Image (tube, rainbow, N blue to C red; front, side):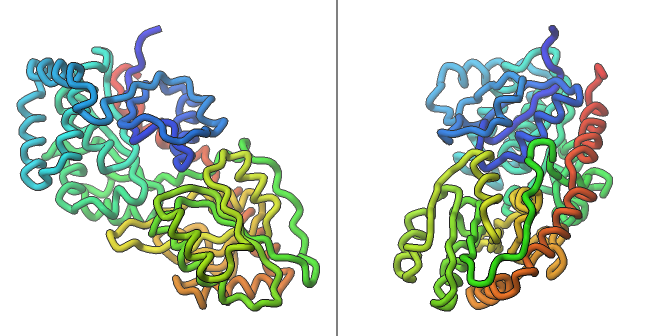
Length: 412
């Protein structure tokens, strides 16, 4: 069989926290697209999702740090000087380096040289997940090889990238993408405002492949006085707002019987555990760490309320539309979150879930509202479940994305 015509550039593979990428890539293969995966980093998660095992694409790992593979990098940097796009690529890199002279920027160039050198001659196009580092690598490699490139943007990559870089990745005059996709209307509107034409950026919701999820359990009103089992899934980082949630739990009345389970890892793990201890709520909290998706779904089916206190971090980082909210809706688990970014594109406050401001008082009040009204949770979760099935399934987005990718492949 001939080599795949498409190179997909990802930040790392596999990653537990990026199920939405795995879901998309498996679906694109099932839609008939052939590609190789080029990962900027080696995996760090011990566990994987069953979804990762379904991907058939060959995975290539680029040098994570250039000094670790000097021969490979040196060979590539020498070889690409003979490519027809070298002068243009080197000029683009030099202009970027003038504005961002960092080790990360230099690493992007080195990784792009390796990709451009090692990818087969039959390569026709590149597609990158995330508009920051992976797209920089894809862009440089595409210029070197004289090929089109495209991207899928998400959240952090949009809101923490400098405007000059986004504009240049969105303009054909500066070797920008042939097209881009992003998973929220909120993000699409912003990127379209920076592009040479709004048509360069499409809104493509990830949606859920509902075939991967069990039928939702029957959600009946909680019995009066029964425990309120709450849970969250998310990395322990600033933008997830778990400090607000822990402080809110400390405000709940002593007579309320509640528990909270957290799934996920992250750099703030120790700080959040210490915060819970200081707040006097540690004995009601279970920290499960990273879990694969079957374990996450089992936890959702056993819980009464899903809580995700997303916020905008100081550096501008924020969620887009977290897939985990749709996963909760797939199991008819009532949702409490915030009106940040694109969350209201799925959750209308008071209709499909509750959206509270980023304060402990607001979250404590919302949790008490669910605890005191046994019918509220099931009513909200039923509406979210219906909206998920009618507006946020995976298939339409995959069909659109596959068509766009085929449009930049010359052999199809």
